[in-house]
Amino acid sequence: MSTRVPLPYTPKVLELFRNPKNLGKMEDPDAFAQAGSPACGDVISLYLRIVQKDGTEVIEEAKFESYGCAANIAAASMLTEMIKGKTVREAWEVEWQDVAEALGGLPPVKRHCSILAVGALRRAIRAYYGGRDRRPDWLPEGLTMAEKQALEEEEFIERMYGGRLERG
Amino acid sequence: MTSDVRRLLEAHGRPEREVYLDNENSGWVPPEVVETMLPYFNRVGYGHPSITNRPGWEAFEVVQETAEAVARTIGVDPEDVHFTHSGTEANNLAIVGVARANRSRGKKIVVSAVEHLSVILPAESLEDAGFKVVRAPVDEEGFVDQDVLAELVDRETVLVSVQTVNHEIGTIQRVRGLSEVVRDKNADVIFHTDACDAYGRVRVDADAIGVDMMTLSSHKILGPKGVGVLYVADGVGVEPVLRGALSSQPLWPGVENVPALAGFKRAIELAFEDFDGANERVRALRDRLMDSLLERVPDALLNGPRGEERVSDNLNLSFLHVEGEALTVELSMRGVYVSSGSACTSRILEPSHVMLAIGRRYEEAHGSILFRLTRYHTSDDVDYVAGQVPEAVERLRRISPLGKG
Image 1 (cartoon, chains in turn orange, cyan):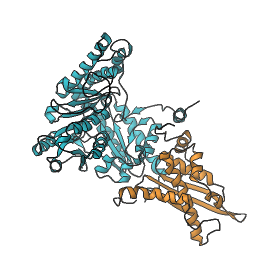
Image 2 (cartoon, helix red, strand yellow):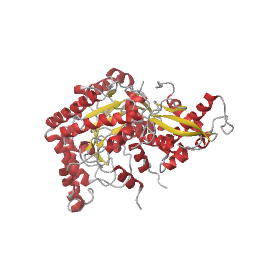
Image 3 (spheres, helix red, strand yellow):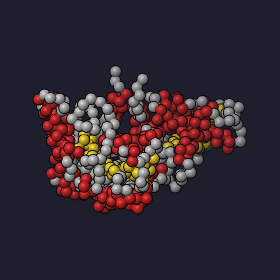
Image 4 (cartoon, rainbow over the protein chains, first blue to last red):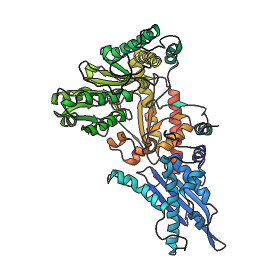
């Protein structure tokens, strides 16, 4: 096995970086969340429009903003494409590995980009039901592994550098 | 089978216009330097410089003449010029070689906080062997203060290493003054300077700036990659770090990179034939780019000093609310090739230690972009870059959730 540092980017990442889909802020979203921190160099904002269809909640529209490297922008864009049209419950099941795979594979140094994207999604879904004050049966009470990983990404830099940071 | 990198390059495409400004990291070699190298691959001097046959002696002649060219430009004896295969190797030899040869005299090493990692990391690797490594802090423009440095030097100190010009932010250290205060404190200290980013831009006469050791690198003056230099003053103890078969030099084993040495020698001649004139032209181009970008791009910060204490070819700007690696990719697709001090580019997810040492916040370090010009750039190149950068920053700021109030 090669021990070289792998290429950080795939053609798919470059394509979505060049022409991101679902980019921009959404006015009056039904759900919104942000993951990451300016100090880490990665922030993803995710906006969802959720409608009722045949008695279930469906993500009609998903938009994002990203401060981060090209892989971060591509991961956020890819995630919004993957969840559009899905029920909220189906969207909850999307894992960061699915996003990484859809991008043609992300090397270890870029995996936090898809972790943050999925972290933002799950945070947005929790915010959605939190605002409605009802938790569906399928939504776990405690944090899932993916959410913990996103949190770890956010806390990583503070663990490394202590209290020297000013949060944006 | 098409490789991943081939597919990536095809997806990127070749921009219609290209301006390469990443000359700090590596770069383009002028055709006349390449032509000088070519005969040494297969017509002359293709032998081993320390073997007793004609192609070997031809190779030895290249080693010797290149050592003489280096020696003339830094005011030293050619006998004291040692070649390695890179600046990184030369810095490792300087730090580790001096520490090993002088360990009986003391076990403290002082390096500036903004040194190249090929100085800082070898120094820190010696901590396992009982050495104490202290990083001398710098001010917000990257300068080491004389009094602060003097305070850090004591009887235990064997080595001080402060670069002549910073590789990221272009600060020209007042090396002469620093070496004087160090010697006042402890006359036995060996003073090393990494002059890779100074050579060919500011005068680095070893005696005039008061150093015992100096590192240079061929590719930083538009020579080929694959040649580093360590000057070691007569009488300074250095132990070889690499061990191996014979070479024509005492401190470095292996076969000297003779074609690259021939190219390096030509690059030295070109850099020094119109030293002041070329640097003035580069400085004017750099200032044109700097003024234009600071005027056109809001929320941009200059990293490093202004004026005469900044090296002629360096420009380093932080563009707030965008991440530097994304900006390098965006600019690459526009044919503008630069690098960033962002954490993402470092592969260890930590922003440039130089940016942090001058007190930049993480967000500011993540948005830093390094431009380095050469005497081969034109004002058309600069105007093209000055047109592309604001558009690239603007596109990424539209994507970013930050900075929107």
